[in-house]
Image 1 (cartoon, rainbow, N blue to C red):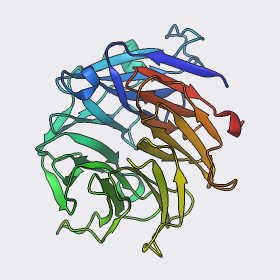
Image 2: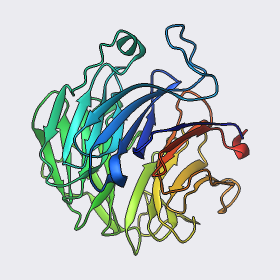
Image 3: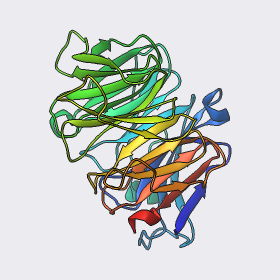
Length: 335
């Protein structure tokens, strides 16, 4: 397996996302001191296969195109789905930042602003999850916080549209359904999976189920079956759920004794998913072949926190962790 890597010295990786517009670009959200104190940095990275005469890119490495600083740790990042140079980040100070100039032309001409276009501040604690709506919700941002609330934002307004209340503990992840309009899911350290209607301004969940007996830290939706979503917990379990029969999970995968920090359903295969784990591994699963991981990649020396499939390159995966390392590769089991 050929892996391209990059190290962000003194910055620990929390989240990364491939660009939906440029297959070789990705954003990395990081924090100082493992997110416990200090500031955060947002990196725009380019894979070595970028062929741009203006950029002297070493073919053996991932290249850092630009770096933006924030006064608190950055825990999540999301590209704008309709503008190639705009993205949002979620911070430990309870704010969201919307950045611009995240493209090659702006970088080369040194036109990338050092400050965000706008800062959205309402949450009272860390924001650990951010999702930028696509299709029906393309103009809205969804934030999930350790203050036990979720907020829906119009990116053109300073104040949130709705505050959603229904969890009793820290919220770690919230994701829009890619196939059902106005539906999103969230998971919390209260162990519950909640489903919400983004147009319900009362801010109450449509449904709440106990997904894990311990903390639930991650969730993601299938890109192929509108009824299927996954949750991952500190119990090391990945569970699949069907919206048509939510009384119990439809499958269960065991990822080891440590927590499943992030899940990513493949946009290229209906049965493939990846998990980022606190045992320093990234695991690749194929539900068509059974309940055992098809591949376990132990390329990190600390918690793996960020994970994303490249939407423009089949089976290309990136992960990042507290060891300050970003890896981009295609799993052997998918080649």
